[in-house]
Amino acid sequence: ANRCLSRDWIDLYVLFRKCGFTLSDFHGAFHRPAIRNPAQSISQAFQNLCRGVKSATDPGYEVLMPNAPTLADVAAFFAKLRDEYQTEQARLAFQQKGGG
Image (cartoon, rainbow, N blue to C red):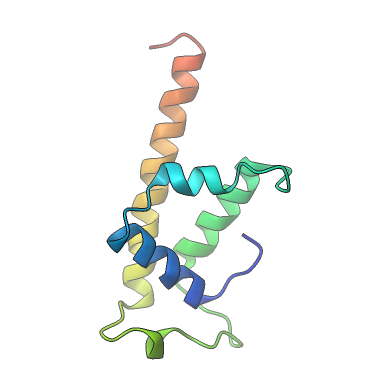
């Protein structure tokens, strides 16, 4: 989640949209011994993915994909996924506390 390039956003976008990558897969990628605080890392990743603005030094992604989506489209896609993820995490936390 530390690296933040639009090419990475597009890679994830394609994984989700065309390769069957799921929120469970995304969540699992952050639960490895090398990641000390998975929840914080996931939150940071979603912040980066939903930002929709690339840095001045970002090389861009448009040449890598014909008919590439706009950054606004990519950000909106990840904002929807973030909302789904947060809803599911809240549901699980509620269940663990005996609420459902």
